[in-house]
Length: 170
Image 1 (cartoon, rainbow, N blue to C red):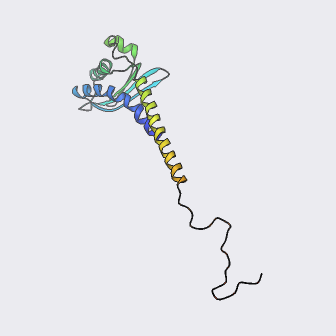
Image 2 (cartoon, rainbow, N blue to C red):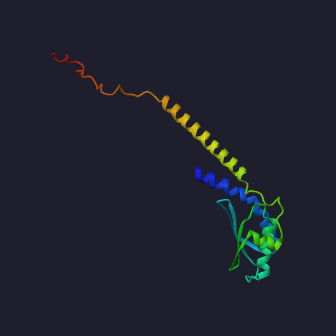
Image 3 (spheres, rainbow, N blue to C red):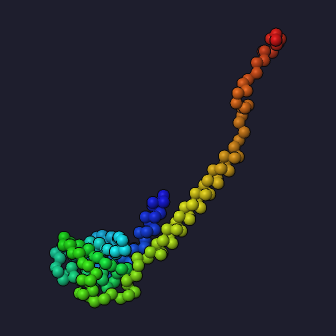
């Protein structure tokens, strides 16, 4: 359950960021097939798979996709790997700056680390509160058990003669 909560919470941070780029690419006539954003050792990379309407990609279309991501994606980008149809291009940050100019500072934010961290902490708190309630419920249910119908263990039944017969000689 914890893995599910962490997966959902960490994946939601980039969803809003990508929705802006997705709508911009769709308006430009591209179909977004896949997106993956990663942060490794403080280096932000974005993998993007896009398809053109006719299935034939030109260098201008490839450049257009890179420009849209560079000017619209509201998180930091150090490396951009773009696959348009079957053509793959890896672009470094310095190359995008040289080609399209510096990014707006408002776009170059962290990938919502603080927000994601707070959501994860909140998820853990909710998980532990639910776990605590379940434990308390189980302990209380165990304390209020019904008494056993039989006598205590080890105290077997007593021998009594059938009615009308005297007790055995002792």
